[in-house]
Length: 471
Image 1 (cartoon, one colour):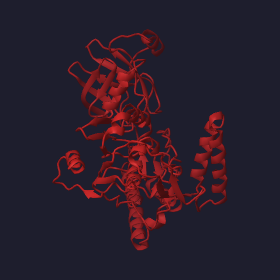
Image 2 (tube, one colour):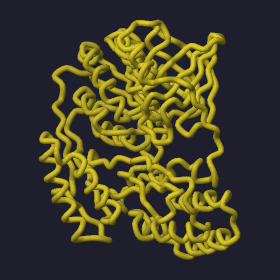
Image 3 (cartoon, rainbow, N blue to C red):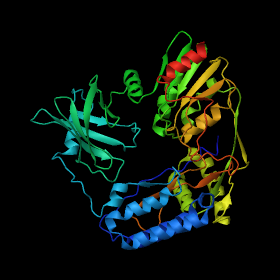
């Protein structure tokens, strides 16, 4: 589905805590103006103007008296009115507090000497570790130095990070001899739990669902372990039924999913029944499940397209993207296409624009010669974004039944990015397009309905699906 693959990355802004902040009434006024003028769902979500205007007036009065420490709650209350999962805040901890509340801790180390000491050396735990695969909870990429202390503990410090909020030599985590850890998440909140070191090459942290791989140790076995630790699996349940578990479609898991499918091609081709478990899958990219569709679908998929609301934020974001790839010869076709789209948007600023060629999207699927004859997809309330698109597409297959509960309901407005509303201490994220399904087929706050509802008395959904398929 080419239109929906046209996603815009959300970039974390570098917040300057020392600058003067907006008074709360100014921040709310700016936020209201931004939403009313640049949120694609504003008119649809505020049909009851009496209710909306009354709510806005009440919040405006609250903002006039609010302290800086409580202002974020007022702003958040306003955005919550729209009940749109693609409206949210980045780095809200920094937004709430007037000053940084955490105390950074640094280790005394010469990073250059440390890297030289452990480069390409097989020393058990000490050395250089990386989390090239992001966690399902959205942590950043880090290169970590792990060094042993006199107390027989190990301290993990930052060598480099994709986040500007983290500095070299800053302590990221501690490993204690009793198997417990202290781990500072992306916002410097302290997390505690138990860690495990697998084959002296992978460290996993239970409560934060994060893991680090020792530098230069990635091989087939470690990739299998990473797949397992990430929650992805394809396994045989019975002689007839296999289970594919896909907890996320995030960009960083595309290779893991593709590898899982490729390595288990024989099972997919020769098993009569397949269960695809996407429960709690919050989405990511449609590319993540594209290689699975030949085994699931019975025909190509059809869906309606999208309309972008042309705004300066969208136009500037697209321009910034192509500025970053314009020298990449392999992406010249993409640069040309986006330049054409920018020109269309500029000519229609403030309006909804279909920048693609058709109002209907047909995603051609080359059906596999051999594949399961009957399939169950398990979905629940936490299935969202591209997870919901997967459900929407697969329900078009003649051999698929959706088991579970209604999904999250967040497909009407999407392709989110950061919108500046004049108060840089707050990082607002808004969607940029609306679906052409609207208003006839809304999904937001409704969800996609299952073919078979799994009520609260069904404890084992997988076994229920096995029984359904085989009996």
